[in-house]
Image (cartoon, rainbow, N blue to C red; front, side):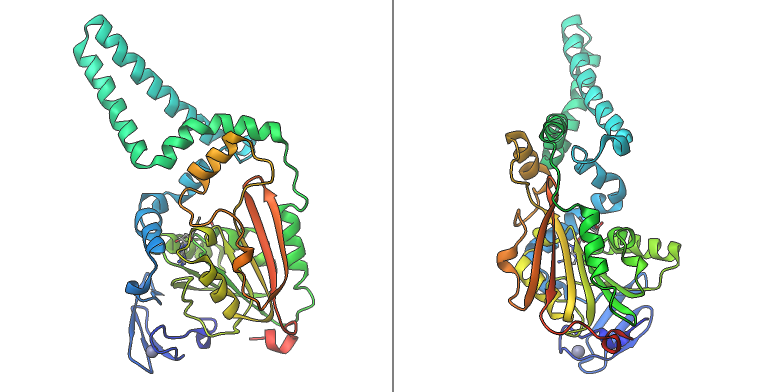
Amino acid sequence: MLQPEKFRCLRCNAGGFSRSSTVWVCEQCSQAYPCVHGMPKLYIDAAIGLQDRKLRDKFYDGVFGAFYAFMMPFIVLPVRPAAGAWWHWALYLATCGSMLVLAAGGVWGFIAGHAVLATTALGVLGLAVWFLLRQKYLFDLLLLAIPTKLSILKSRFVPVETFADVHRRAIASLSGRTGRLRILDVSTGSCNSLYKHGWMSLDGAYTAIDLSAIMLKKGQDLMAERGIPIDLVLGDALDLPFQSGTFDVVLNYGAINGMTDPGKALAEMTRVAKPGALLLFLDEQMYATPSRIERLYFHNVLSSHNVIHHCPVELLPADLEDVQVAQVYEFYYICTARKRGPKTSGLEGRI
Ligand SMILES: C[S@@+](CC[C@H](N)C(=O)[O-])C[C@H]1O[C@@H](n2cnc3c(N)ncnc32)[C@H](O)[C@@H]1O
Ligand SMILES: [Zn+2]
């Protein structure tokens, strides 16, 4: 445990827990928080918002979460550079090809009087279509991936500031700080973004939180594999189990737009940030000139489970300043901001 004093009890707001690898108990009100894989479940299940619960139970704690590293690249297939996605494209084409073969086999079976062949082929095809229609976004992905890819190739979108530029700017803005920075990644999932986008180059004390046990276990495995000390917590972004004014950097990759109350999530990220701290979050937003097919893909696939579909600048708390929104890809923004107040001095940043 890197910094036990940063936590708070969701029931009574006090700090101070008696901790074991199976349960944390609040020393003030005796609320017990069980652990999953040694990580405390610092949320009260009945208080979770409807959409957050739905995403947790249907996606992240389900098949989508279990195969996240495989599924996610599929969803963003048309947006990714083809060179790095050839394997997924091959699988996509194989799936489309198999469905066409089944349809053709069924029709030919009927015409040629092979009843067994016809019913088997159409039965399997029917099952596949039934499955895809239950996951409508997958069905739409199947239909839209190629036209969207072609449309994106034609549009030749060039960001004013790239994904890497924004990260360089954000990380450079922290370079004057001395002492260890307290870095929080909200909705960290598999800790993939926290690990990959430059935050590990800082002298950081890392904390990461997510609502899904399946996703966070992946994060736990990645961090253990890389030997990175980190405090991992199961918790709700809409009611963070941390004391106010704790972190120098607060991140959120790919989750704000899908939350029950994105404004509340931003207010919570701001509350737990120190004065002068950096906030950075990324999610879906269309660029200025999407084609009709791109709009369809965006709304039916990429942003289909979201509550909002743009960077929620209108919901940002008033105590944020220096707000900058960069359209880093055709369908993604990154927003950076600073919490009003003096930049954290060396001593404040130190732990
Ligand atoms: C698209 S994934 C992104 C994961 C990771 N940040 C990344 O960049 O790979 C969204 C994550 O948000 C988490 N999430 C959704 N609602 C949440 C909430 N209310 N509180 C905390 N995490 C939440 C999900 O469990 C999931 O792991
Ligand atoms: Zn308590």
